[in-house]
Length: 98
Image (cartoon, rainbow, N blue to C red; front, side, top):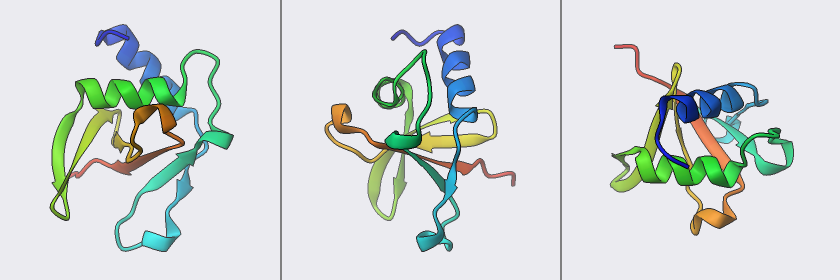
């Protein structure tokens, strides 16, 4: 999948349409996740989104480890699965409004 405005918009719409779960076991690091069993999209798979984020996203360090993120709307998204073909969870948190 190429990095085009249309593809970014399609991914944003798919991500925003998901049912997100608050990560209550890590309430001190507020974020949400969606699991593959509840992921719904006819247009694009969770693995395709993970690959897109990894290929076109940006790296930030979290507790000394690099993660690749991508912003869509008011959120930044990431996955922690490797290999990407095994992705079964996508995380998101609100962008910092400072």
